[in-house]
Image (cartoon, rainbow, N blue to C red; front, side):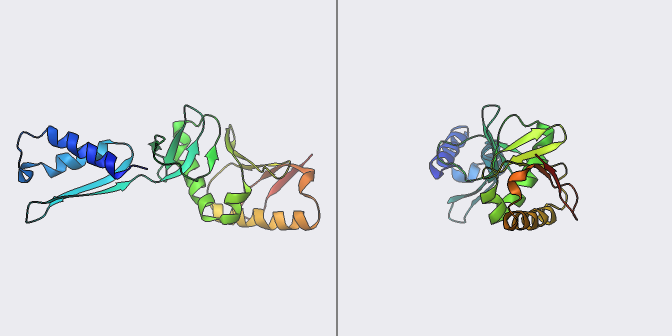
Length: 192
């Protein structure tokens, strides 16, 4: 998400604020805070070696979901916003439209689970916010998936995959307009 050149520029700007030219006079906590102020950086650790060499370790924020509405941004696994980077485009699930900030954590949790499941990740399209949950397109079929709560997503995905196999084997999938993954022990399908 953030290039080493960008980090070096941030370090240069931070060192210009220092009154002392000596590295040992640099306030390491202040330097870390300045780096962490950048919303592409999750954690920064700065230290000096015994021979006065400055080392900085930077852990970037990792996107898990791309939001295409509101000018566009990413969410990390905690639901924190990450701006688009000119250096990096993440291959993550997409959320189309506007997502309220109070729903960021739930959407990020859903995206994390989708990222863990190869079938679900490749099978599903764009997500949308609905008043009663999240709706997900299934590009290959005429139905959408609705998820009202994000608890026990792995079990819900496993139930959906069983439904998908059964529906494919019996040529039933194009007879549905909506599949609701609310309960952990069943799915609810609404026919066209």
